Length: 210
Image 1 (cartoon, rainbow, N blue to C red):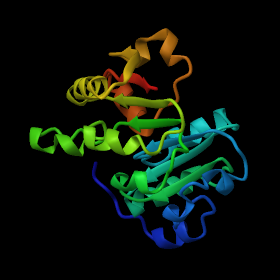
Image 2 (cartoon, helix red, strand yellow):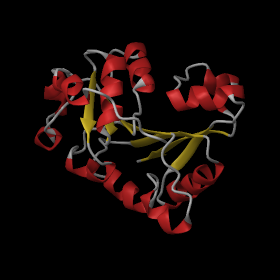
Image 3 (cartoon, helix red, strand yellow):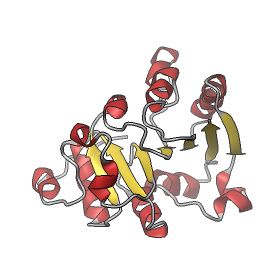
């Protein structure tokens, strides 16, 4: 993805009420941040926030947190989302996720993550054992990961990695938008909308582990 610099991104971010600037200070206290005891769902790599906004509007009784490491992308997301009360945004690297949540998250979304296609880069994939181990520390009770991607190599890798790590796989689809059952409640990301319009199949899986 080619990142375009956003003019005045610092000022856009500075006035936002949904950015959490000190996320490591919130560990163990995220429900206090939202001032309620609603479930917390996290999207890693939220892009411009289309999925996050759509989900938060559709499910107002769930708290959503988006993670993104690039300032320009965060600024665009802030402009798109506005001040929806059940959304927070964290600007950080996903490698730090276990330093921000302590058994507080009920579901994790991995939407159109970087596939890191070369074999030597496999450990950087968000479904690699390195990341799956980190996720062990963030989940509260049953662990649940929902992945969507247009990359068949990443998808195959994820199915194998998740299964080998002890996750059970559900709702597997090799073409989400042609699956009447799974697509009826689907909320699109901006990448998903673009790829689907090009006729590319969207792969999805829900993985759960006790």
